[in-house]
Image (cartoon, rainbow, N blue to C red; front, side):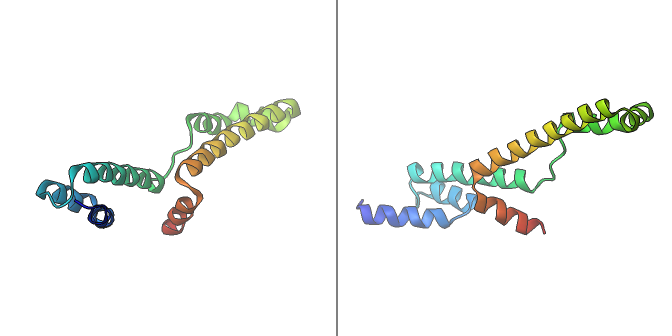
Length: 123
């Protein structure tokens, strides 16, 4: 098999979806050493895309903080005690910063263009 026909098969295989690629490997039209890594890559990309589309629940720390702040005694102390209010606000900012860092890490892994495409699709 020549290098030209090998690259042509690779180019053709990259255009196929997972089901088509699986069938092509089974039929022998795409060699398994080309098809299997592409199938794995496409499945991983699909899972990452689904993870981005699913609505993200706030982290546990943020949920607990929100529930805690709804308690009447906490709300009353928050409104009356400046030191307590400052500590609670600082903790809320720390939790928010952790969320932003997680989002930045995901953007770093997937790339900014991928993030922009996913945000446009969700609009």
